[in-house]
Image (cartoon, rainbow, N blue to C red):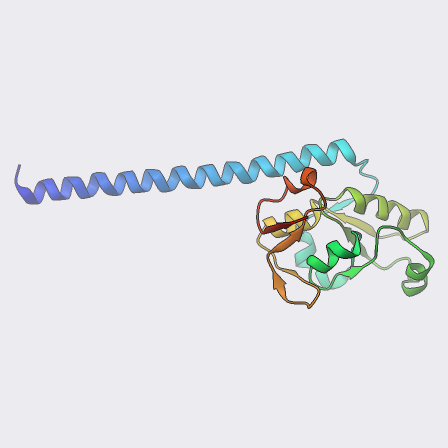
Length: 179
């Protein structure tokens, strides 16, 4: 076989291996993301009662200005990172909150690390008569895993995410995990 033909044959074989490797890597990464998503699905079914309807990351992004976005985590978690334009609400609804936000028909989205604590907060809002409350599905973890920006205490973009605990931290696939 002439040298040119052998080089072309080797080049074709090399390109095929590269393509197969790239496809394999993409399939692996996609399966990891699906696995993490399904893990959160399982966890939310176990811990949540679905008493506060979910809103997806995509739906929130499409109409974010419509909502009062409430971070229902501990203050130190919020200071590490939070969603754009989020207001720290704390872990419990109190008189200061109801005084600051008296419009009970205002659309509200609550979030926490994965969506469990925020459901509790949303239930409290609903019990007080707030009528349009949604829970961000997968909360800040899914937000970050979908490639969206989060901000620190200085309102600067950060990759750090407070994961609350080792147990919950396994559900975050991107960013720098802070305990």
